[in-house]
Length: 423
Image (cartoon, rainbow, N blue to C red):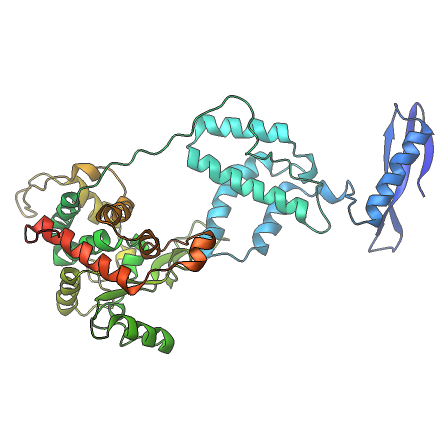
């Protein structure tokens, strides 16, 4: 039972926390004082706290005294995530969260101070960066409240669905329409920069929507006619042979890996180790491709003996090059004519991609298929997206949908080449 004592004009109540000191085995107590309490009010306050302790809801002040930096370190070590995600979280913590909150006890973080911090961030950084910081901080605070025993009674991060302050309409990124001609222009520029490999690389990216890491990691055994016959996975091989290699075969490639640097979170300054990892979000998948692209792949594999479908100009892995500087920038931005030992003709830029990311080539793939009438579920699966809800449970791309995609992509190629009606 709680007991009362007076200290000057302050009424103090002490109560059992339901915990014991692991070193001595003695019961632990907590207390609170107020100059405004009567003895009855103080006593009832203590009864309420003991009730919370008996029902596992009580949070002692000492529980939340752990510093934010210590909680963040423990939290990060407990995660079971991709090394890239682990590294991303650590970067955000070191850059922003720890300098702001590191020396603050978790139970002293307030909503008002959080809101002031977010306001400062929004004045200095991009929307996406601020959202990443808010998401990570919110997760840390939610997990502190859900921890057993809890460190805080509830998260100080407000529910963003509850509108506060001046309304600001979200800014939607404006995306330009990408004509097929511009994608072919990129392929022609790539051929001028790094030969036939570059030409096939850019057309493969344009007509499959693969991510850059997946392009880096495309190995020759996963491209027809090698796949699916050579697949070591018996079930996957038999399923693919039945679906794509029957009486009316469809050319396919297998997106099985991405080639990426896996960083050590404890040594973020180091570049990391080149590693074949599963595609982003575990989105390994089989992609049907149009006949023209299958033929280009056949010619490309016959022209070299590299393990990679798209080797670098020096013969190694594209991952280990400065791809953006020496491959992508001259392809998208062009270059002036040069004479002498390193002579080269002038290369015209692709205006719709000038100073833009190569990832926007992937962004164009979905809209092109939608324009031509491909099924939306087939487009999402092709891009490696997880379809949410009941629709994702009960719907999937059928062979008929994939045949339609093959036809649509071949027609788009032929229209651009001037060799087909597009019907």
